[in-house]
Length: 576
Image (spheres, rainbow, N blue to C red):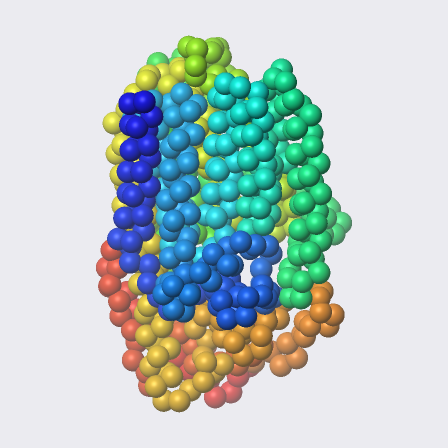
């Protein structure tokens, strides 16, 4: 049909725009990127031996992503870039599937394309699409499950409905081996869809059998993972819970909600123009909340803890795109592009848009759209239980540690779908120009930030090459978190992580810690005892280290400041 051909074309265009943006950032650097150094090593070992061998860092199961990455090694030879290239088709497929899901939820052609690109050009998604991290692969499995569930919902015959449900469950069982959280597709999303189809013959019986098969398969896979040497299966309950920890958990969840609003802001911005139609009471409530948040930011800033109280609120990916001055990957402070006043202003803008949406949700009546379109009620029933379950699995992270921004990638498409549905039903069929402007700015920042991240890594490789040129071994060089992780695996075979329980006694306390001042020690150093550095690659000159004879490395970036420098220093003669 012409409408279907149009939707397929727009989906392909959205996927290709995403791929072109990733390639435009030139994500080439022969070293690790975030955690993918561990996974790249596993793909390399699999390509050589045919075995999945963990190395003491993976909490994700990785599953099919390992042979998938090994395939690219076989095709193009081993390099970090070749393995990372395997993520690009999955990123394109994710954007395409989201576009198809948006169309099936009744979103019009223009808005569906904007929604798909909000994901594909996001400063959260784009850097991960250029890596060999498991986040994009896990998202692909979730979106595939959602799309197949929609096909089941739209099927005309009972037999076809059951077939689509079975496909959704079985592909998600296999796909979830890459990242365990993706199994919520078969465990939650498929049963939710089956409940909407419960009046069809045979659906309830098949849904029950599929759920039992899913539970058995998931537990079997988890049991296998727990038995693998140097794997790191995570426990849900990791220790006693105190009131302080509960407060920390609530704070992390609030920051996660604000970060989710940030990454969906291009669509959320569509609610800003309707503030003029809000009642005086609604505007007063919004203004009071914004003033309170601004005051809290000032107070917290005076205490030196503002960095995670304004956008992007959560750390790991977005903050590394020239936002945070200290990211823990290397010693020293890195240049920033978004200054503190700019971040505060953007935070207030995001919160204003989100609060406007909340006011609309609380005052507007829900209504179904015309026949043939999925109602908002059905969309919430398909997506709501999944979202609640997803957040529930984030609670242990929020309780015992921190929530990273990349953990929100699985919730991002759901938020895009719901916000678009609400806007199309309550405000207008067409997204306003402010959405296109916000999407363009986000895309440019994501591409430039990803480019600059890889430019930094290429500079780090060049700095280490200088030191290597005089015969210094890798174990005498501290190149930063993602460089040292690879060095440790190459030298010792695994990361010295205290969470390793198989094989027993594999973890060895670092009996000879680096005798350096605390500000000159990486937090990651205890995990890499094989690295006993004499030379350090740093963001800025550290007074606790000695100036070396090696030249600093200057590199160009697309975000200001456009010329940046990293330095090579030596350990002082008398370590303290």
